[in-house]
Image (cartoon, rainbow, N blue to C red):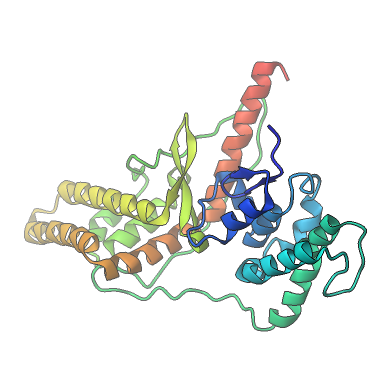
Length: 324
């Protein structure tokens, strides 16, 4: 069945504009699917409000919104303008006064051009990129978030594909490449959880999370069959904290220094206390969620590249099965 409107983020579909309007303005936003991560928030909103017919061959027309969030921040005003156009049957742009033969053409014009241009005039000078300062919290935090982007090779040899999928998110990460001495130092660090996560994410095979900080959600690599699934940020962070604790306990149990046995035992107690405090303190949970999300966000570009490679590999295999 062909639907008139569809949400770019979650694939919600409807034949009625009012349904899609209610969908985009509701307080609890829908979760991003993997495909939507290639679009900015403005592109997602505009594409969702456009009819599916108007989405055809539109990629070039939304390129100016690639790094923009102006429209999404002012979507309530945008909706009011579109409602006014519909109710008053307007065919003349409120901003540039250009006239159109069809109401739908004016709506498309407003969505793609004039509303954004007007916002850009008003806000461009004041709209600066703000870097979140993740302050240290003594129980588990870290004020030194490493933004270390691994180089991803996007070249695919169609005759000999050698590509490893990420480890499934529900399982533990691969920490085999982390130096043994560094591991032992970690368990004596006040920032053991965040430092371990940063070190883990240096290994591409562990990049199984694509976080969406603005919408408090993300996608994770589930397994080789289901591929990527959507999750709320809190669930991602809860799972991450549990896995970090498990890794830290394993590292602690493997520590060999007999002369430091008392320190090792104390370290194990601290590992467990930090995780318990996280589970029981809402303030700590909020702070940790911001820190962990920031660490994942610093690797989002690399994690997205991996998801694209997986998608391309799947398409390639299907083409082979079809005989091209």
